[in-house]
Amino acid sequence: MPSSEQKQAPEEREDVQEEAAEQEPNQDVMEEGESLKEDIDKLLDEIDEILEEDSEEFVENYIQRGGE
Image (cartoon, rainbow, N blue to C red; front, side, top):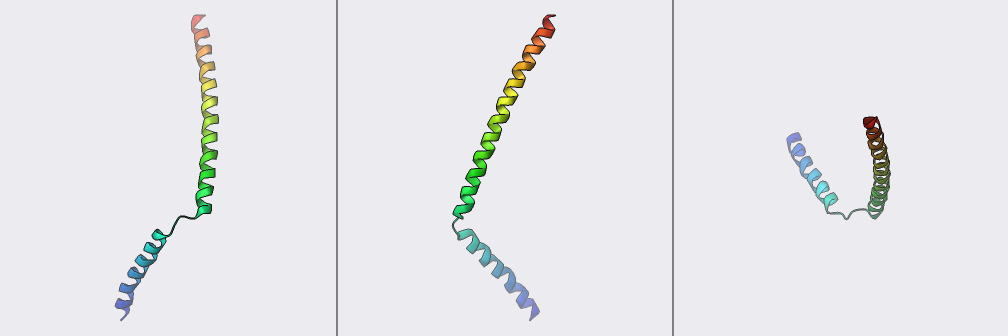
């Protein structure tokens, strides 16, 4: 009999997983995800600005040194 109980357990787990997959996404989780995405986008924009400024400064310094 123990072997029949072991066979039933995976089937029950599959049912639970299928039910979880069929549920609609949690609205709170979706809103938090959107908020995090916006924060990441803002951070990446700041990084891009800093890299752009640093690259311009690097090129200006390189040209001045090369011209000496």
